Image 1 (cartoon, rainbow, N blue to C red):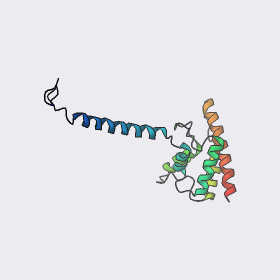
Image 2: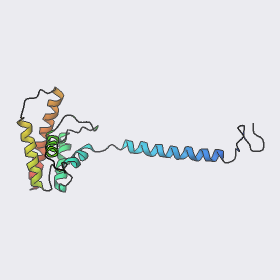
Image 3: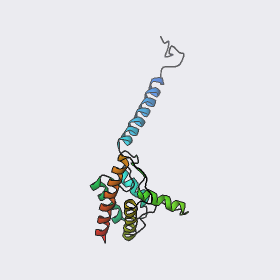
Image 4: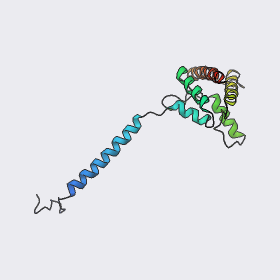
Length: 162
């Protein structure tokens, strides 16, 4: 019960409801905006490309995206949910660059179509000719088959760019 605009707790009721409503409305708006951005799923094929071809020309990016769409896989083994399926050959190339002390280890594909072809051929060769036998689960073997299919499709599209 309130007397003369003073609520039960001793605080004025005028303005309190309005302020509380504004705070709730602001919080609701922020939650709705956050949920909307969560529903926009990132394109992991594009993220994979950016992590190995930041300096690559647009033709290389287009070839990568087309091959990824065609094969439903990309050269890094990034799945649609953002998880890695396995350690891909392009990831191994990145690690090798890092071990050699190269600071720009994200530039696997280079800045020309020819350099991207060379990197893809190297990844394909390394995938087909492992340096040591390592037992793999069926899931990893299947992921490597998709990786090989991706490199083959990507290489074909790159060679069409020349």
